[in-house]
Length: 428
Image (cartoon, rainbow, N blue to C red):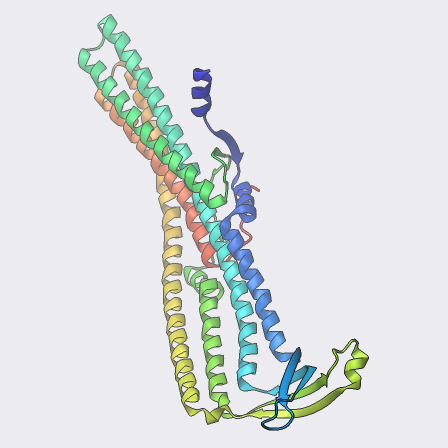
């Protein structure tokens, strides 16, 4: 029984196979970041409702019961008690109010802001999942390469041990093989740790709440491709479409509208109203009872906020300061996005070039390894030189894998800066 419990505790987690598209679908359904994006979309709809509500007639109603006790004659002990119901139904409509109009305009701008914020969050989620998935894919490829290196080191060790037995190799050759095998084991352990960390990162990013091992199934046979007419045009396109920059612009627009609304308080606000007031000793039992005993009043109300000069001046000062902050933030955002765009484009171009060099370097090392194997079979190369060739091949393979996945990461970074939310790998 104890052995059974120990085996259950130490059982390896389940393994699931996921393509990049499937990982994205999982994240877009279950990731907390997607829930935040959905909340921003809901906020956009609420902001539209607030803007419309401010322009529609406002209704209010009340119904109160009260008891009044008073003396019949001054100094007399006799009192008179009266009970009654008082109610009011009021409808009001803004005719002209700079602050209300500014608030309504701000609500509609806020709706656009929340919509763009939702786009930014979803685009960021897609980038994060893509980055995590490619990191896991690269870590698994590197782990597989490290495992292959261990197998080759074990084969070499067995070969030299046999040669030592036959007198065709020295003890130092066997020790070198043992050292190479030990180094390969250490590299494999490091690769396993990196793979486990990358797996945990993808689980968190994609919103997978089970302890599973994700096996990437995406095949990266060629580097990522982006259709770019020129670097300058791509940077300009990012500046035009970047969600963060668009949100900064909307914040500046909101601040400007608030300033106009604050200054507009110099004008009187006008509203029209209709009121039905009920008063009787009995509670109204129906609409007819109310209508028989109500007093209807209609009119126009004017308000002069300018009479409160202190509040008027402070509101204008606060609005102007907010507008300046918004303009400064928008300018800073523009500079940051421009720098990020230029860096991303340079990074993508550099990743493409590094991939070409890494591919050529890997092909050269593979050919060199093939020749070294042949020379080793013929006894024409020393063991230490052969190990150097094997080490160079492993490094070239690791560089190639990193360069290949980096092209996709850099392309995903550009897609995020463009605010794209429909990214799917071409193999899907």
